[in-house]
Image (cartoon, rainbow, N blue to C red; front, side, top):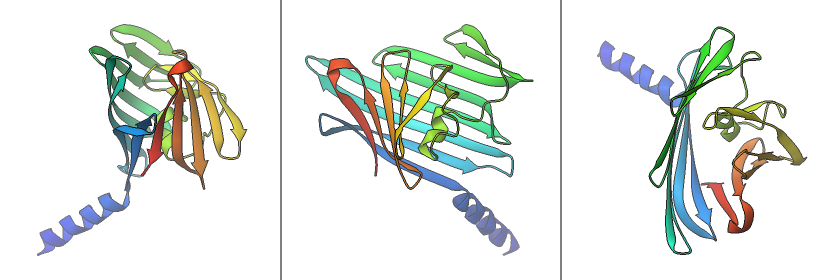
Length: 194
């Protein structure tokens, strides 16, 4: 009986410290996929984020399939480690980021980089749960690079990525309700909170 009670308490603690968000992915008004983001407080100092996203779009005479997986840890409010896998049709990009003293080692498909300048507390995975904490230094875990975020209105922020996509984040009461990804003449892809 004591063991059952202990397991019940652990399960309640895990449920109360986890938060799951689900976003539908839309193109030209039709649903093409889903993104699920989980945030779990492991203990007082560690928070674990995961993202699983899958979409399939038929554009003109081609099919574009995209899968994205993130596995990110923050320790004492700062990025500790990050793994992302991005699959676009048959192209795979693997990105690993790990804290090493006061800098980060980054590996993108076998190419090694280093991020210096101190500990990172703002990254794209956190934007699903909070408005940007810094507009100067937002890290993209997938690309292993920083981007600048511009506030364009109440609860609205924009960021341009090196791959030519503009990301527009829209918040209501501090919660991300819509993410628009805009690229050239192809129009926009939307993630909408369900």
